Amino acid sequence: STQQALEQARGAAEELEDMKAMVEELQEQNGQLRRQARQLVRRSVSSLPTAAEVPSQHLLTEGRGTRERIQALAAETADLEVSG
Image (tube, rainbow, N blue to C red; front, side, top):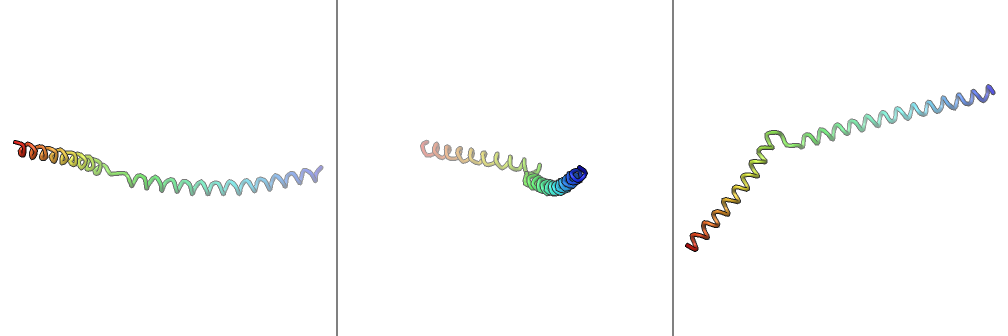
């Protein structure tokens, strides 16, 4: 009976040590994943346009549209001059 209790205690102690090792390994993996997540967030944030770039993109798009309208009007004007 005492022998059986000692064996159970040893088994429980070994299981506890195994669990401690597993916890340490999981904590290390968690730390690595957190570091990777922070790096991904930094990369994502750094790839976003700055506040100064956003209006510039808008103005470039607007400028292209205006240029296309001017070209269309110039073509219409040329057609009118030829037919008139």
